[in-house]
Length: 259
Length: 259
Image (cartoon, rainbow over all chains, first blue to last red; front, side, top):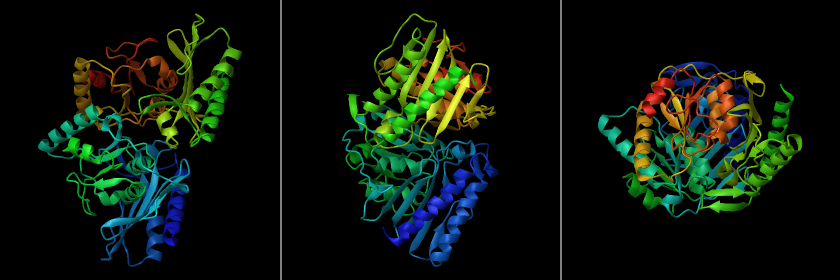
């Protein structure tokens, strides 16, 4: 395990434990509508992480959710999801994570996703495999989508009328062709569950989520054997906002269904 | 807290802790297709629970998943879900529960849902409120479905062609009209999350799940303030296999959408 990975794990655990300690005490400090809220713990977690990264890597870029990006024109970028699953946390439900990734240019090179509620820490480094608490992870071996479980991300409903029709058709095709679909509003843990072989595919159905936000889960899935492309079968790149992740074996079938 | 409730909580915790201890060691002992499996821990948990109930209440009925129902023609029936979330458990993911309910005639009178992974115990007794680890629960106050999150249960795909079309229409209506929908394959925890105010509605979209299996979650939701009916707005009764549960405030809107 590299020193950088050790640093990220420590940071995720520190933040995650602070969040868990404050369950049932959090306040909503910003909201876009009734459901889409930010709590003081989202902000505190982001500040803990940002300040530790800035101290150790002052020349790197930091992309974050709450207080804006820090762009130092570096080829290294940190992406922070300080609290994925805020809506659960806010209601006192122990289902959320802290997620950090370090990108070099166009791809994540280290990623950590930590679930403080179960004390489960997922991590991966490029070309070194993916692990859960030290146990090596491997994607599923499912070969047919009729036996596959797909996780769907629905980030937003802000889209044009024509886009709406595409989404509805996609949703029905997914419902009809997969064994099951799941959606639970915590994409980072969904990608870890894919790395564990529970999900066979992951798809952001709206294509409205910048993939850079998912760096931690992406490299964990990839190092467990997952294939990552856009809808055209190409590597999506850092600035894309659409990605299809599968166990590899069903990738072509999934792309065909989603088109 | 009644003696019977204490007994059920103890039993759920005993079984749940045994299951958690055996994560990553479970074997599949029965399967219907690649995904639909039963593990040795489903069976062991059911046996622990059955034998304790039989010892204490030899004249009651016991309805269980793995080894068949015990019908003593009693007006008291126990319903056991020894491991809800088997697919997660089998892949080493800490997201599952043990659930027990005691029914008198047509309705659950005591229910417990225990999540051993987070050590969260939900319970309720008729007319005495619903609790999470002793903290009183209350359903959400959301008044419009456009702000509501609905949990969908998809139990099976075994249905006729004509039924398929109804389901597809329903799914699209739900997608279009609610703020979000969620589905994660653990109905007992979903009902507890509704009792906590995270979900505003719960619906078994296929209507293929005997509601008696959900007794624990049902009374926890009800005692937290939820309304429970069938699609026609009537109490579904013990032998129904269709139910709509909401925070009460959006119930009529939800029934209208689902019809």
